[in-house]
Image 1 (cartoon, rainbow, N blue to C red):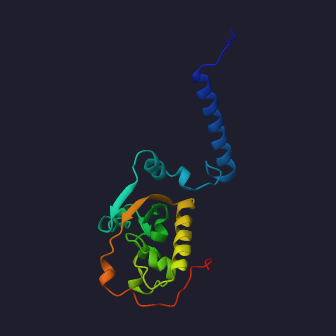
Image 2 (image 1 turned 180 degrees about the horizontal axis):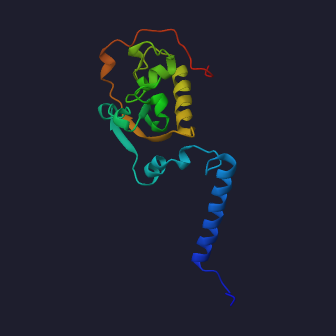
Image 3 (image 1 turned 120 degrees about the horizontal axis):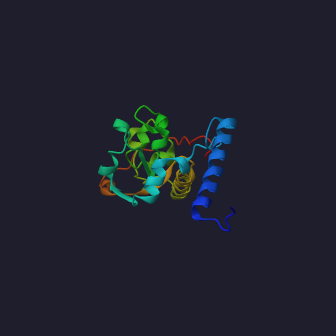
Length: 180
């Protein structure tokens, strides 16, 4: 007996079979069902955020709870833009080398590169060259927005109550490797 047309179930079976065969071949050749890809597009947290969650709008106080303690989410902010860096817990988590960057807006340290000065971990950009700040901040925001493992999640509300205080003392700029 020969059928004249395909049903939706037939199309689902064909597509499912192709995907299964693709995953099987991928695992055979690369030991990974995704041909070795390990980016945000196969991370369930990215899809949960993209489909189910709205853009986050946090205060600085609320942001300070997203540092990865107790295996929680890790958020990093640059000049008001927040990025989820949870997928790289080894670097940004509690024992990571860049843990001081998370849970706060540390735009200044992204411009100066002065990691050894605790007062540099702020979004206070006073005393820095305006063009340098704009170039570096836009560059780092682009890096985190387009990185295969990180994604934009929303904004942090910045308060400028530090205006009455002196800006952080100058330091010798130490740019990140590959940045000029």
